Image 1 (cartoon, protein in one colour):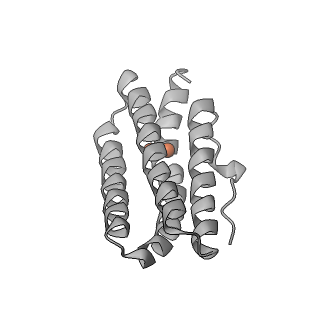
Image 2 (cartoon, rainbow, N blue to C red; image 1 turned 30 degrees about the horizontal axis):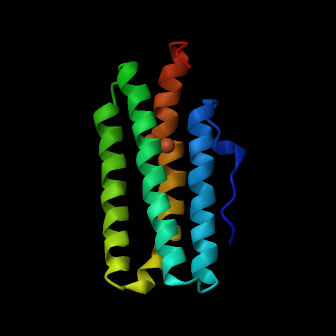
Length: 134
Ligand SMILES: [Fe+2]
Ligand SMILES: [Fe+2]
């Protein structure tokens, strides 16, 4: 199953849409590599890229929300933090040679991204737009 970008995830805020697309593309590459039996270094590199892109994306969103006083910022930050904790744990376990765990990451990330963009990200985008801030 291919993880492709769908216009239903477009928020209309360019930097956020670009970062979301980048996350989808990285998850898709990871899935492809795992399914193709990619070597350990390649998979570990993609996992590390995924962590890096996620951290950068969350920082972008959180700075938008903080700048414009989004009231649900603490809850949204908590969702980001808990996802990063899970991702760091999975990366750590993979490095301890639990290779099979790499299989779980694309499924976990795909579900998380789709749910979080639809429920969480659209919440603050709607807030920004209602105040003509974005
Ligand atoms: Fe997001
Ligand atoms: Fe978010």
